[in-house]
Length: 227
Image (tube, rainbow, N blue to C red; front, side, top):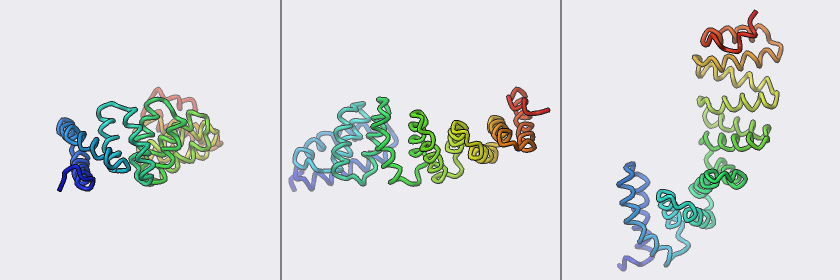
């Protein structure tokens, strides 16, 4: 069979793509990319609607630090195969590298819909929204991150921070109580939980939390809550 025939090219590119995805050695992956590049060029000439071709070409462009080329291929991939999360993730990463948060946000939101078990994506969304001052939305996405990973500390940490910014002391206290369970050796969690409890008028709880914060860190500002 003619190796330039579209089906044969697609098979060859798919095999190389799967091998490159599984390869952890950067040098070995670079050799695979070099082998795949001319095949990809031919494939995308004879079959410009090959989603696997655009996917692999975008990833090679990223590894070669060619962001504009990667963007073109990711955009085409998104048109051809919108259910593939690679394009949403790839474009979001490119936009964030350029500081284009407004463009990254819809990519990340769609990616979060696809990858419900990925705790980092909603956390990225929450960071952007916090930066924009959209705190209630940020709080929602912190909770989405926690739903995906109930034992990860980053989601609770940001939820506590955003809740304090919203003056939502109840939500902040719940978040820091959980952090105290997950990271019992960090004085900062006890300190923030103590201040939230204090603002809610729960002085006994505030005192207990402050005592633990000071035990772990004698210089903790939570000392101000102790008699």
